[in-house]
Length: 160
Image (spheres, rainbow, N blue to C red):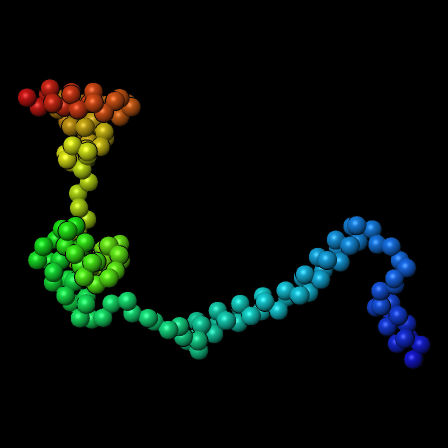
């Protein structure tokens, strides 16, 4: 029986005289990585289970106090504009995106309407095609492929 144990130990030791092929070396490196990393898999699963059960709780750091939120919402409701958001960001030491996100979460923020470079409201080509279709009483689905300037001129011509 002692010979059997000694034989197993002898096999486990690496023989210095044997030459491994590059493929064998790659296999052994891969297996070593798998053995080294196998403990991480169980940890992640166990951590998620404990978090779901409520054993592990994350700290909730608040970026805004209740007073800050109250003053922000009051100021924005009095004057809902981008300038107000910029002033609040400067006053509270936060970014404008952070202020907008907080106001949105509170249900107060209203997005500013999109405008073109000239200051006109943005009109989609599909809206222009719908206007033309309603005027003539026919469906024109391929008009969406036309240029926006041409569609706008046509809408202007029929609305006069």
